[in-house]
Length: 427
Image (cartoon, rainbow, N blue to C red; front, side):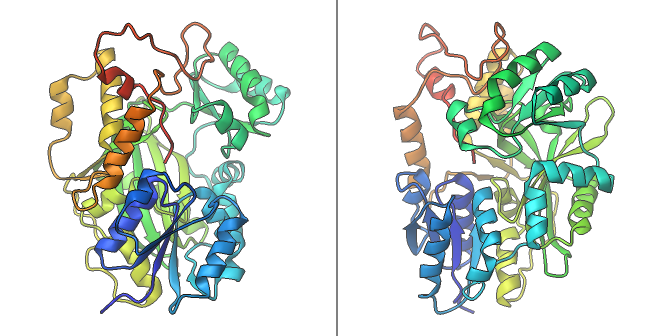
């Protein structure tokens, strides 16, 4: 049966958007991509029937969708791939509902789950396992929190603000003492109206688990897929660059429980970390209403997560491959995994042999695709061309508060060093 409903992938100019477009196109779904940055490597893909441009973080996106919707012959399926586009679509769903399938939970649920303050309050009331967390509105709050936290801890904004992104590439700050917390708060407090500080759950990158899932209109989990990180970039506080399918029934149980509590619908993702000391699992954060960079590991494992959503809302038979087989499939973002591996190699924690062994077995790739190669090579070219000698948002051992540390050109590891130490974008 031919696919007459377009999939509209919003945020083609990020890794998640590119992966989503490729996955759906491979199933025969016609894809229209919407991007903000025409120069982004994702816009070099050949899988989209058309690529449109709009500010995907503003009302410009909604106006573009309205104009596009009037020209569609069948109701399209929206795949927002950024948090801001999810919020915009949720808040404009009445405007867009005539032309698009909007697969999200109720508006108040979207707002609550996407706001870390309201989410952590909800999770605490529901008895869900979360790390000890404090929200910092003023200096008095950080003074109180500093006396009740265990260290290390992490500090971050509930939602990244433009001011935060202008001042640092750091996703979070890892803090080792009360004095350091006070210093970093003084540095960052003007970058966001509110900050949050949270207990650090000890354990290696491989203790970070995720559940990708899709819930239908009856709030039933049609698809679930569990994976864990092997490495991430930046180390400890970044995003996955090498992940592996695995079985963890606690992660599955807590993820389903979380979404069932709110009568959830749509694509969902939960990140959970296992405490190395106790074996307890803690919910770190959910991602709402969109694919993530790790959605593609489900597809690599033969589970049709993103296509299941398309079929469910367009009335097509659901795909046959919806059940996880636990074949230990892997997913890798090659360039970032080289960056992470290089970091651990310099610390003496990873040998070349161990790195090579970690890539064995069946796997999917974040960017590399021989049928659609231009995005991979465009990304590599851009990073080599524009490298800077910087580490990824790590703490200075001398001041304790530097987000970046400049490396000397006297490093003798060779030309690979600048490539591996570059700043990187979030996905």
